[in-house]
Amino acid sequence: MKKHYLDLIAIVAAVLVAVPAAAQHDHHQHQAPKADTTKPDHSMHQGHTMEGAAGSQMGGMHHMTHAFSLSLPMTRNGSGTSWQPDATPMYAYMHHGRNWNYMVHGSVFLQYNGQNINNKGSKGSERAFNVPNWVMGMAQRQVGQNGLVTIRSMVSLDRIFDGGAGYPLLYQSGETWQNQPLIDRQHPHDLISELAVGYTQRFSPKLDASIYVGYPGEPALGPTAFMHRMSAFNNPNATLGHHWQDATHITFGVVTAGVRYGDFKVEASRFTGREPDENRFDFDRPRFDSYSYRLMYNPTDNWAFQVSRGFIKSPEVSHADGDVHRTTASAQHSVPLLGSPTRWLSSTLVWGVNDKGHGHREHSALLESNLQLNRWGVYGRYEWVQKSPEELFVNVPEAFPHDRVFPVSGLTLGVNRQIASFANTLLQLGGQATFYTQDTELEPYYGTNPLSAQVYLRLTPGLMRMGM
Image (cartoon, rainbow, N blue to C red; front, side):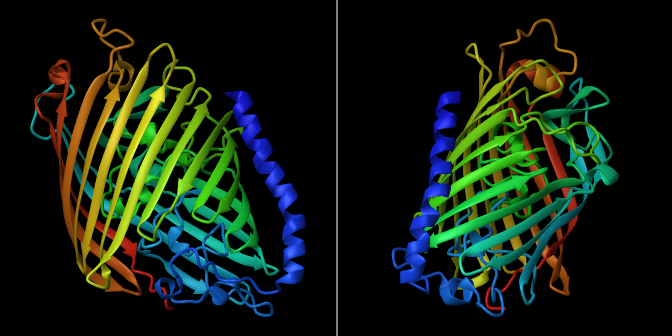
């Protein structure tokens, strides 16, 4: 496997080194890039022409493009270097400067959270106020005619508002607090969850190559992280399969090289496998002991597909599970409805598996959708995940062997409504409920068919108009 990874890196490096010479020759023959006629025209959807996206030689970029391509629309941006469908709506603030363009987006939920509110298993129920939150900023500058520099950062105040143990979330597992594994709780994100820079060189409208360096950042592994997916736009909760699908979105030390040709992009990453430690305010030691590779494909404006695989060196500090081979596949779909930018439907299907060796595999699956109808939002999420005894119990009962896995399912249904707006900022009121099913051996601990519910107020930027 290591040899295959090194071969892939060698191929990417060869392209990065060899293609500029050919591109330089092409640049002398074609001073202005031609539009890519092999794809649907994004200019109407984005509110600008390809020439506008390419920027002005004298005055810098007129419009923001994709973070890692001058030839792609910014709506394709996902977390890290991932792709979303081009038809994905964006809720953000934007400012166009003379040489730099800036964008900020995020969410803050003030939530009353009740977990396992209907049962009396030995784990009991829990109620709490919590404040899931994150803010991401991006700055972008064109370099010459075909170079693009992108700087990104993400900040979360989870640790300040929700403490070191995070917020209650039934069946959730991963990371630690006070040297104990966090179980039935979602861990807080680090204060600095991304601090990354990327450079992309365009060789033609169909071909570009990019390099991304993050400390912390996100490697080429998994789909767009849950908080950045529009299919989860109104849902404040992390996914139960987070550590099977997209938990590497905060990695202290990552380098990703990628090459795009048309609708395809192949990427390879070297990164730190160990998940963030309990100190959410520091920068963990970079290790660069893990690797991943990913293939992405956007056949139309409405679809985004990816498959990825990674070797993760000792990701968990809570128990001695050792190394993990993670494989993921996903499909994302977005479509505007009735010709209105405020009416849209976005959905995501994800499969992920952690292979810990010796036949010990844990699978996960997720299907989520968000239907937005002007001020109203209706959304749902179905999850299924296999979890080991160590992931559900601080002290594992002797009756459960180490290689035992328990299937857990959760169905979340929610609705919210915009109740006010100001300065392109939305205030929403919402609520949701989650219905769980589980292995019968878990009933003494969680009860029968546990139920959880939340009500919340939310602040988020308004819909960004592409023609602004």
